[in-house]
Length: 206
Image 1 (cartoon, rainbow, N blue to C red):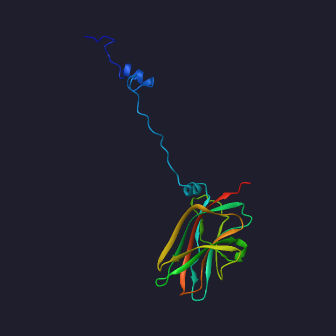
Image 2 (cartoon, helix red, strand yellow):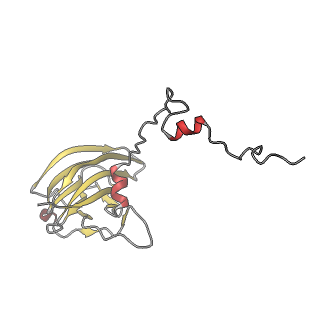
Image 3 (spheres, helix red, strand yellow):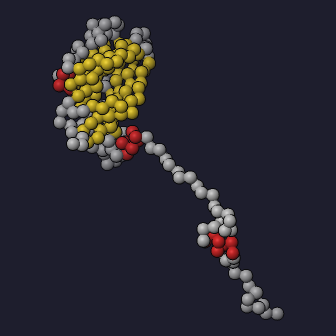
């Protein structure tokens, strides 16, 4: 016996429930779908700067301080850089197994540093085949007394075979022609030290 042409049920039946759902009701006029809260993803500022090829990090060669020889390392913003350097973090590592090290944090004029050695151990935070621009900021180091035209604003003591680290997240800002310097006095026993820094750069807006 042949089936009636209207006896076949379509694969999907558009009933009242579907009509209400298309009108914005779920599943009936008196019942609405639960609203989902807005999903916000917080991206840390240093990560955002790295994604824009504006974040850099590096370190000095091993420095020897003590035994009558003082040394220092610095992050320098050259006078005509036209950028601000935002210090994100620093690490002071004392490689001596027996003696502590003292570090004085100094802020002042970059011109007071003379002609120090420029570290080659600096890289962008975003490593890719198409390289980021070279940084304006420089990590430099030298031996000698604490430079003039600046202020020693803090002191850190680093235990043997350990590191002291601080995350500033951009709270310290170096304008063109200024420097953040880590000074290691010559008093006490000789120790080997390494200073590491991370920062990002932003153009100056006038």
